[in-house]
Image (tube, rainbow over all chains, first blue to last red; front, side):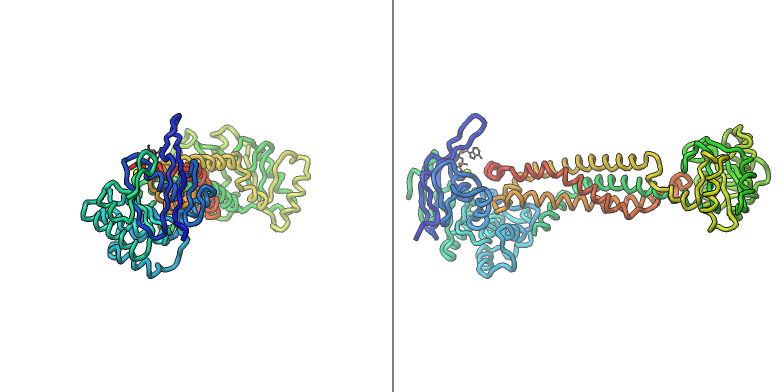
Length: 225
Length: 366
Ligand SMILES: Nc1ncnc2c1ncn2[C@@H]1O[C@H](COP(=O)(O)OP(=O)(O)O)[C@@H](O)[C@H]1O
Ligand SMILES: [Mg+2]
């Protein structure tokens, strides 16, 4: 079967004023469907940039990225928006919940942009139960603990049943107990629902939850373990 | 779903939402108050004109139809009118401005009453001496005057002899002769009124009068014609004034909403980034801001209508001798259009800025 993510010699240059920042200098990787991959590396090594490109939030300078059969370099801005809606779910270090909406509101607005309406499907209800946030759905983010907020953010990222979940340091702001819970949940989602997951982390213990670990440095994948 | 987000966003910043809606509200009030005042004052003038009971109004050469002017005609012209066929009664008045938009009117009491029907006195009664003044209820209320009180008007001391129901030509009446003496215009009238034996002959008589060479230059109106002059188009400068008010409202609304939306967008950089990461396209972001703007405009419009009703009440209870206001519901849609236009224009730049904003910058720099 064709891998769900194919990246070939990907380069990304940011133009900041007069300066060119080479964030990615030729990244190549493949992720088969249903795999849980960790990406580790020092700050500034291009991990987030790689995620933003796979997630269609920013454009490619050169190289090829194919996500679930779609070649991103061929896409227009509005096609990239559509890709973001259907194929990827993002989880961030700072949770990034909309503060004015409740947990359920946050999930529903993602669902709205994904073009899904009607009642939540049973499988997603199962995910909510797994995440242990059923009783917190009607609270606003500021009434939730960090761990709860991150679990709501994971639910939000999964509501459109994306092909890939991209988690950028999802445990970076959590204490070890909550980190373990969130990491355990990601692994359960991966095992139970076959969810493809890419996770950026600084923490070797967190990385160990994945099937495979990619090490990045200076805009390149330098090692795999 | 988007509506929920929009409402929650507005609720989240209650003070700013309220203040922006209120400032839109004040512009709406401004427009509605000007419209209501123009209409109310024209309506009041019409009612008072009707109250004369004349079939034909005559203004001297050089006079403008509905505003005050110094042009006059000799009193002897009444005799001429009285011998015109079908004219049953003829009387004339002199009008003198007494400051602001108030005027005092000199009447021949018996002739005037014969034409318009008796005054309905709320207190006091007809003139007893040459220095008596009859005032209407609005003027009495506004100036806190009662029968027997003394007032100084035109540098002359008058005694209030009676307070009458409003609606008969003027608010202050004195004897014609006295007013002519005081203003040094003996034997002169500012307007004349005719009552016919049969009102159906009005057109006929108007045509006849217009064809008389002695009356060349005189303005001769049937009462219908005269009343039809009381429209916004005929008040010099009124239209332009209303346009200026609408223009100012547009500009202020544009600035207020522009500023509100601009700070909203700056402050919500991260939220806009989140929405984009969730799959919102630029048009979705613009759509959200437009909806917020439209809600602000509608809230402001409703507030403006309520405020204008309040202003109407204040005007009609406290200064109704000078100003009369009417509720003008047909202006509500115009006010809504103005507040929507101003708000949407104001939201344009912030909206485009938000749509173009880079999602990553908002999300990745913690
Ligand atoms: N939006 C951006 N504009 C300009 N430079 C950026 C932007 N995002 C990241 N960079 C730069 O690209 C490099 C890689 O950053 P990033 O992908 O965030 O690395 P990591 O997530 O591994 O810390 C850094 O030098 C960073 O400063
Ligand atoms: Mg990063």
